[in-house]
Amino acid sequence: MAGFDGKVALVTGGNSGIGRATALAFARQGARVVIAARRTEPGEEVAHAIHQAGGEAVFVRADVARAEDVEALVRRTVEVYGPLDCALNNAAIEGEPRTLADYSEEEYDELMGVDLKGVWLCMKHQIRQMLAQSPSGGTIVNTSSVNGLGGVAHGSLYAAAKAGVLALTKSAAQELGGQGIRVNALVAGGFRTPMLQRVFARHGGPDPEAQAAVEGQLSQLIPLGRIGNPEEAADAVLWLCSDASSYMTGNSLILDGGLTAYYR
Image (cartoon, rainbow, N blue to C red; front, side):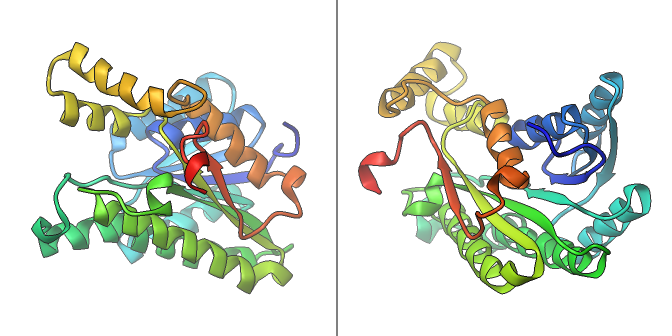
């Protein structure tokens, strides 16, 4: 995929899973990449991998739930590389599985702070930068989830946050369509990430065979018969950020191997 040579891409949650795969993919296509996450060591490892492959990248530690961190992250991006062209807002936590009434207020605040407020804060400062720079404009992709398409037993907070991400995406797309900024969402199904592996461990326990059985049960629900690879999600993100999708904004791109095809 062409079109990213010299462009600047910011990836939150870029130290793991879909974010990591997307940061590496942007770099392979010539973009200069800013990787943001709370955990420093794995974030710096991704930046190092990009450098080793001949690309340009920098890691910036940031908690997307903190306004001052996000503002500093966007400012640092521009200081290091210049105008911001592309952003993937991917940082998220899944929370513990509980019934809705059993979540504590602290758990609600933490999960919504990262998964929904964090996306809003990132968009807020990315949009301000994209409007202020010359030439103005850019592309933003927000990572949602098939869980945000409907309710999820024992995962109501995560589902609510991911549904909120879709609403933020569609609202921003309507506001910014005439100002050169496109905003879309990646609605991710099951991808082979540390987050999904933690889900398998919760349901299967410490036994690897039991975890594999849980994975097998999920795979059987997917028409393509397998869990997705993070690189496949990264390819979708890059397409959404490229000129190849120049007429697409406000879209919820469902990438789930057909998991939700029956219900939508």
